[in-house]
Amino acid sequence: MTPPDDFDPQVGIAEALEAGVRRIVAPNPSPMTYRGTNTYLIGTTDLAVIDPGPDDGTHLQAILDAVGPKQKITHIIVTHTHLDHSPLARALAESTGAPVSAFGDATAGRSEAMIKLAETGMVGGGEGIDHNFKPDHIVEDGDYINGSDWRLEVIHTPGHIGNHICLAWNDLCFTADHVMGWASSLVSPPDGDLTDFMESCAKLEDHDWRVFYPGHGGPVEDPTERLDWLIEHRLNREASILELLEDAPATAQELAKAIYTETPPALLGAATRNVLAHLIDLVGQSEISALGKLSEDTQFIRL
Image (cartoon, rainbow, N blue to C red; front, side, top):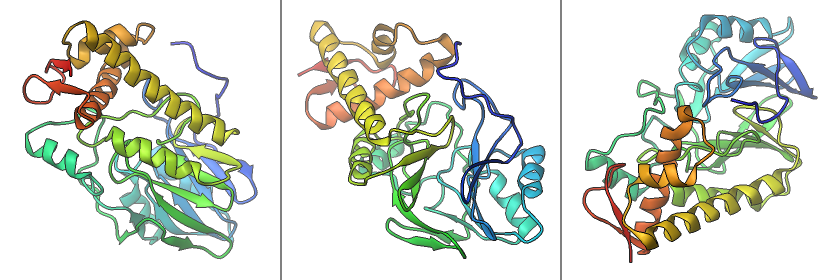
């Protein structure tokens, strides 16, 4: 697959991005994680670690090696419970004594619609949920997490997954997997909810941001433009789905193959989950109807 940009950092090295912000890329590259998960170190004395990353001993050591002689990790913050973001949190907490903060466990923040879908037996598309994750501290939308020279505001941004949070520090925002520059975010029901995703995009648009630091890939230097693109991208996908369903009933997989014509085979499964999220959202809008229990194999018709 051709890289979408020139982001090619040295893995395992703490790189300064600006005053009080460093990034260490984890050694877990893949079609879904790009070069690897971005772990951020915030502060100059009391340090916060945002998204420790996958359960990997070399990455744990890289984080510990980045702590200077007059520094201490005092906070560990997990933006969401996917296996590329949260599993290393417990080992890091045991190594440093720092508590782990997050919105909740793997099912926290699910919308009522997604709770009902999960109760029918719908499962995700293999995104990798950290079902064992348990934070020491629960944070909520609007809470602040404070260090000696930093203050992060918690912004609950469900969509990619119900427990997803972004973290604002003045005019910069750590957007994890909600907003990235190299790809759009995966929304896979019942953990992901497209209705929530669009509302979270609108929520972020209410701020005047200077830069986004995402969970994968390089910094997003034009936050407003990127948010506008994400919203337009989703609306265009919705229009394409409705247009195709005018012709004949179709499944999520059939629609994905028709819409994502240039998508590599390795990513077609993720594309299908994104289409399914759109279909569920459109059912909720009474634009379409499902011919059976909601799943990738269900046919949908235009109303």
